[in-house]
Image (cartoon, rainbow, N blue to C red; front, side, top):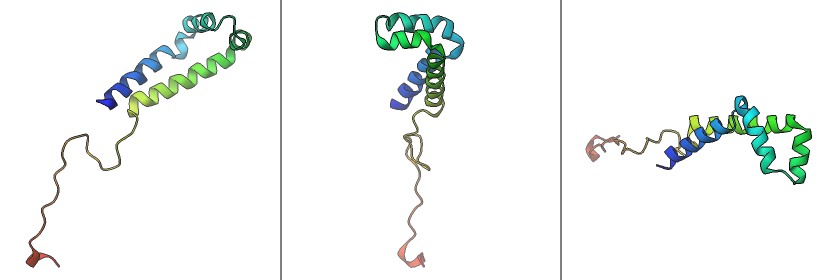
Length: 93
């Protein structure tokens, strides 16, 4: 369940911060940061905003595809794994 939530959150982050949406999201971000030092800095240095948006997009995309990666190697996806039966004592070597 938590993995599905992480993947969904990753898709939402990737969708919002996609660099192709930057003409819409940049003015929104600058409007939210208006009156702050960070807003003033980003309004004159849009390349920093574009780089941060791209980094967030790639991080969200990785989270969406990988799902957080909390499973260990060889671990099943939540279903009980079949374990080999133990051999009787006389057949063990």
